[in-house]
Length: 520
Image 1 (cartoon, rainbow, N blue to C red):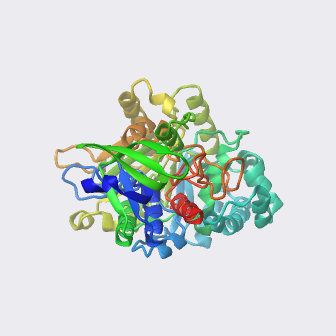
Image 2: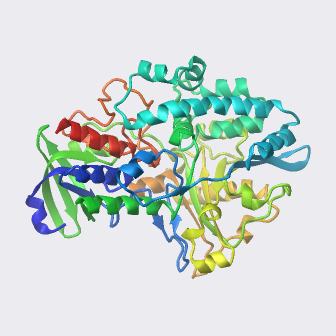
Image 3: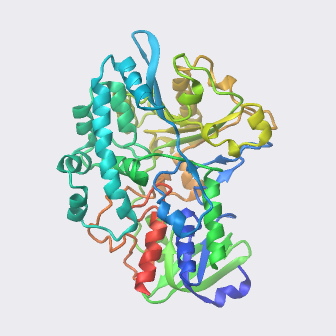
């Protein structure tokens, strides 16, 4: 940002150049507003970035966030983004040992194959029929709820009327998701597969009366109106690269290496103080949009800080020389790892892991889920790696709250990674370590991130990937018209901490821009 820019008043200053901040910048600039984005890091993208984490290895991995479900096609069309996603033909594979033999549940590859997989696991037709009924219900809810995310917030009664299904409303919005799962399904493994969508980044029991698990589940099954989780072509960095280009083309100024340190406002005019490696400065704005968490927003405005929401996940990135063979020889590893590969995620296993973590101990059998980006989109790998059959693996661990890492983050990370991979190895015909690629220095190509790592690297309070506990997608006390408003009339949230935030969606960025344009 040129030195003289500090004396200019912008229509909008956006704090944070993550994907939501870039969405807001592009919308406002396209509407003719002068826009400045202040990003603390040396690059834009926030948690939605692609990097080469392994020395001398031509593999660009989605280092933090990694799949796309909640990004509305409306935003892609409105902003003219050159960004694509690809669907996965396999939804999931969950290995298990029963009657002393390895088996599992493969969901996907067509209705016939899925039906046969359920029968092979459960010995009958009932569980698959229940699966169809349950996801038919969530699919209908998704079709009705997802379009509302880029509209002004409906009231609770309006959303209930739009869903127009009292059984679905009760199952998803009123009673713990565990009640519904236990009523609809009998098989422990099937129950666990269903429950996992309620626990991504959310430390909760299936029967938590506060229903954080229900809110998490809802956002995971409404994406795109279908609930499908797609692979970003080129990795997450392709999305934020396209957003940055769209914002710049529309006239927005993106200033990296600029850390906002204070926001002063009287509700009509604002000043944002920042610092850089070269010094400090102040820029004036009519509106300020904040992509940081509500916790960080309070620090910037001098308001009381809300209690940070606790993150509860382990993120592991790996590069393999080859996919490992499975003990369950009825399933091709290229299919098993193409969707979501569930590890130690039976229903009772998830309950046991939560209980152990709630008692302050690492889970004995840490649950996790894994997928291989490069099977669907090999473009993230250099041509030589593709020719040699290399593949990526992304692992996301559950029920590992930040409190478990506060004593010695490095030591606990190592212990957790070891036990997590041991759970995976129990279902493999060869140890995963034998399949790991090595970098230019001969080190295994594997890295792990705990909630405390995310807090340090991305300024996520408590390492929570949603910035705070997810909220129901309807209006409640003090939410405002768009769910982005704050107590300061010309300061809005445009990050994941807004109502209807969380995930890679661009929805808070869109809604913050709409709120600003309506106020002008």
